[in-house]
Image (cartoon, rainbow, N blue to C red; front, side, top):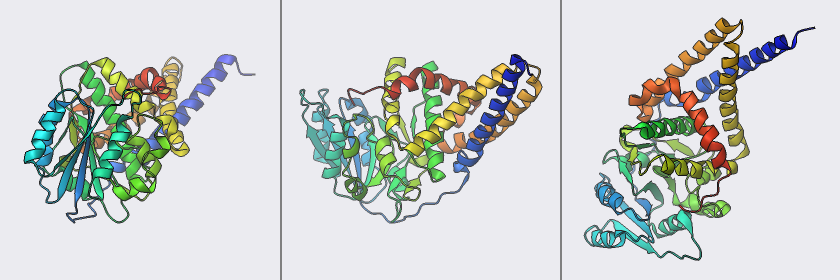
Length: 371
């Protein structure tokens, strides 16, 4: 009869082998989405409405609105929904609208008795837009080039109603920026590659396009109006299929946003994002949970087996995954604009696990109180 220690070893070996295969499957099956060539499907310069919702971010408006209004595209408007700003944004927007015919400003008053959130502001902007093609970003986001509108909308077609873009953060000095870049890259690694492999589940409001018809076909945000967050990922999760989503990876189509605060600010942002995860479709939740749990048990079994007499085989298994992961992540960092951070990929797994344990679980049960 095997000794308890031998049974534990056999279980650990079995777990390690299983989760190693799962991890390799995810990297080879899903995370190679960026390896394929995706060409634009539409060359028409149809009208585009760029929609921006803002609250108390006059510096961001002053920095980014002129860049958006000067995009190299023949037929577009910029709809800015000012949701009760008190920092001088109203005066700035009204003055700019006098000299910029492409700018349309909608002002909303804050009702202290009933906070309506960003979804209400975005709905007002969509209803006020005159074009069927709509492109969304935030007031603190800077387009990487004057071809942003053209590149993002060139992936629309009769069948493609959603276009997912890449939204990065400005590079800054400091540990917080390193953590933010790491987590943002990992988020992009998942949602971009899953979409390219026909399994779209989310998008980011910093760089997202969809058709007005699609929005009204599901009655807007009606199914998750009670959740303050999720104007981007929950909408994509509800409306996306394996055929109606396109992905734009062109470097000139990326947006860059600033990191406004320190660790506390970033934790609040992540908790807000994770709070929507419980409302994803069941197959998307299962797919993501399998990935994260296999990653957790991979390292748990790896650390345990290093203390046993099978440590050499364990290192070989770890090395195989490390090699495959490195090749695939190198291509992803280049395509997603994170190449300067490739050197940190050996630390990415442990960093992501810590973020999931410390922020993700709390965020899953978090209920945002403001947008």
